[in-house]
Length: 343
Image 1 (cartoon, one colour):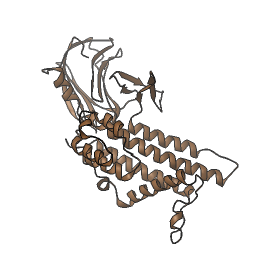
Image 2 (image 1 turned 90 degrees about the horizontal axis):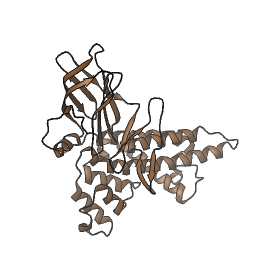
Image 3 (image 1 turned 90 degrees about the vertical axis):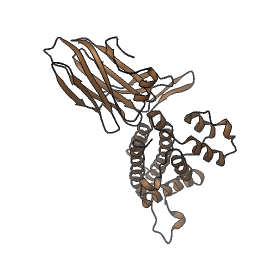
Image 4 (image 1 turned 180 degrees about the vertical axis):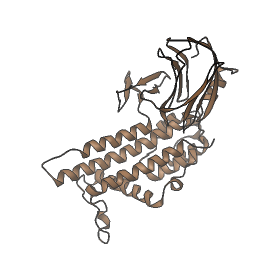
């Protein structure tokens, strides 16, 4: 959406979409005039999962918002000169990348720029591409879900969902009971199950998010792998979007080998190259323990009970903090990798 006084030098809307649907880039914008003390949306565009907004406020502040699932929402703000009643013939440049966003301003009287910072306001799109504002200064929203006509149209991004998982476990750990140790075991085991579920959710959500941020994925290799695992007709899958492809084939992202292969086939991401072998073994150990908790007993106290002796016992009450650190380290490294893929 462009205001009538705003000009972007492009040939067509497809070119604008291609410029903006990218992990990094820059866009020159020319504005004929901005009136002082006047609030106006100068520019707004959704490209893939990227949201761009340029706003002039009543307080004569120029705001550039950029949002994507991987980087969340950031804002660059410039306070325009108070003694200028009218700002004319303005040349702006907005830039964005996983590291930073920036807003550059120049006209005959003034030149300045502002770097981005984390925004109190978060923006996200629903399944139809409409922009939804989430939260505000002093208002924090967690566990976002919007349902319309029995359909989920918007939910938290992968990285936000992971952070919400950690907050949930923190809440569980804060509880107390007169039951003592049995209660502590129960909380530790339920928290470990929650941790693994959050891990699975992140892996699946992030896997689907990445192409909408402007990164390519190897569809041919991905389909080849998925059809090897299950009896699907390759011809039925080629025209599907990535989300449709995952929904239809329903791979188990909680399975280490499956997730490892999916990320490698689609994006060339190798889990073993971004994490140490010892960290990976600890992740696998926790995945296996979760399996035993679900399918054997929720009251198992010793994570490595099948190997005791000769191993020393590892109690789940002591193991939880260690597991939290390991899973978070893995996801932070993986998330960072997804922000810097080569196309």
